[in-house]
Image (cartoon, rainbow, N blue to C red):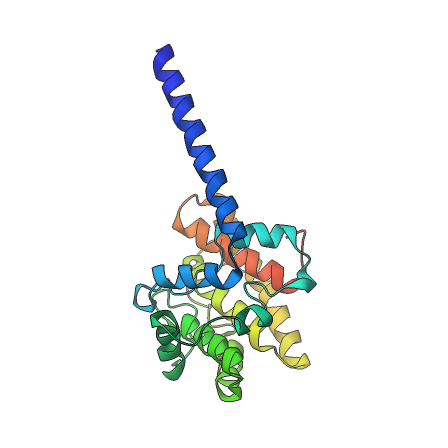
Length: 225
């Protein structure tokens, strides 16, 4: 029994050491490298094209003041990204397509990541049309969570928040968007709220809800949340 416990302890220590080395390596990489590596692993068709909160981004959110960066990427970081290669072509292809009708209640929809693709490509190329389309989709998405579940809200909200942060909203739009974001945290959907789902569900529901909750809090500048 003692040997088994010692073995488990050694294994645990090894895992911790590996995690520490991995975090250090990721932290030392340029932002563009980290972003490209994530895109290579996350194709659009798998619905995980643009994951919002990896370990490195979570560390950055905790360590940096809100004013010094974007929620996910700053405009300066986007401008450093390449405009060639399969990763870029994947995002560009999504940006060239139609977003469709935003519907946050549809947990199987891709309108949210298509909106984010428009925002990313629009900012990178200075394409005002793509940026306007992303902006319009963000505004059209508000209140479409009604009738859905918190899984859908958590899964779809993050990309809209990041897109809004990237392209920028006019003052009236921003005020409306902020008021709606605040409501999404505690509105009841199928008996649950985004906050309660994050805190009560230790599974994909809770993870999606937690990512959405973090994105909302970052956009609102609500460090307490």
